[in-house]
Image (cartoon, rainbow, N blue to C red; front, side, top):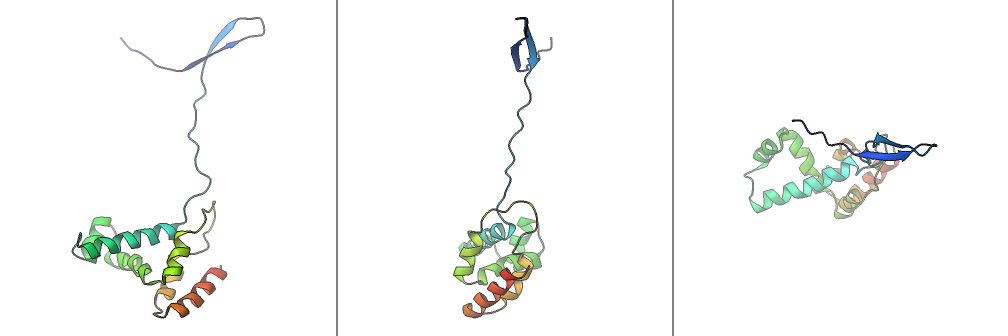
Length: 132
């Protein structure tokens, strides 16, 4: 014996008859905006640095292997921790974006991470954000 479960709706026709019709499938609502990629990468950089500091992983190579990325890519992600705390906070609190290009890319931030002075980082970050 086969049992079929389907939600039905009962509607009345103009003459008073009842009609059984399958209910329209309710589609899950997809969010129109999402967290920017750079915000997610910044959060991952903080998490991964914590894992390294606590000794949960032996080093960057093991962390890269666990995350299924190359060791140079893991280094690029972890270099986001070299940004000044104010820039990190700005990256973490970026507003959700709709479809289209994102304003800030990790590749542009690599040059900002190269500066050791937080003041010069702020200047380069401002230039990075203003130019698209």
